Amino acid sequence: MTGVAGIKKIIPHRFPVLLVDRVSEVDPGRTLVAHKAVSGREPCYDGLADDADHAYPIGPLLESWAQCAVLLTRWESPNPDVLADKVELITGIRGVSLLAPVYPGDVLTHHVRLVREVDDAAILAGHSVVAGRTVLEIDTFTMARRGVEVLRPERGVVA
Amino acid sequence: MTAVEEGTRVFVDPDDPVFAGHYPGFPILPGLFVVEHVHAAVRDRLPGKRVSAVQRAKFLRPVFPGDTLSITAEFEDDGDGVRVSAVVSKDDGPVAEIKLRYSA
Image (cartoon, rainbow over all chains, first blue to last red; front, side, top):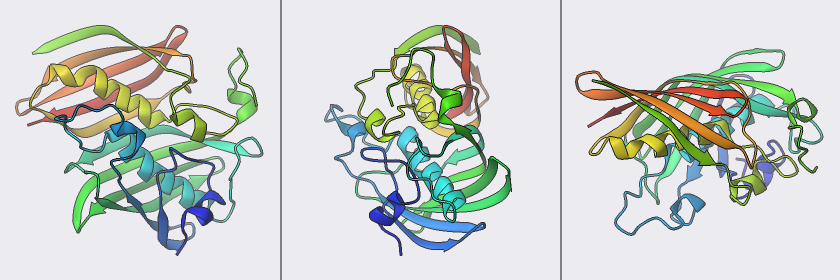
């Protein structure tokens, strides 16, 4: 069992967009199972009208799963600081089914499977479950690693 | 039914809390938050429907704080749902192509 402190030793994501709370199973290079408790105190709910739909937005929902994908690929080569290493960037995603809305109070269990990894690119797939019900399926998620120096915009982001 | 909506513009606010944690010292918008911007730009045109699929998304270039995104979306009725094909661009070219599906 790996909690937030352990997760922070492996991936560079930090508050308020570290969207994984706990890793319960990992078979390095193959599969990972991790959990994320959705809270009504997350930034996406700030300023939301009282009578608005409080379903967890697709941005953080998919990002939470994607962070589990990064965790799996970085399990044995941790990358807690993008300035000291490379940064994982999503290059594509395909076949995402959003089967049921997720609400504050739900605990997402993300399942991630590494399909293929070549040099600085990886392909993953998986699904997410809330209370025994599959809420999300992802057929293909692709990501690449790039050095921050390659990405830095001309106008200069201060390191 | 096919309709095209031209150029909804979205300013990527450097004060957005997302940048404090993604990543410290190197702020960059998570690609999947670009999907969220497309959803936010089109959902009011699709009352009573929920986003049910991201059929495909390609991320061509990163988005940084201070960028302005322009979202152009095409809507196509497919019987029991609506397919939305969006291109997200910055001034100097496309950053993402995103296909969503909405259903009742």
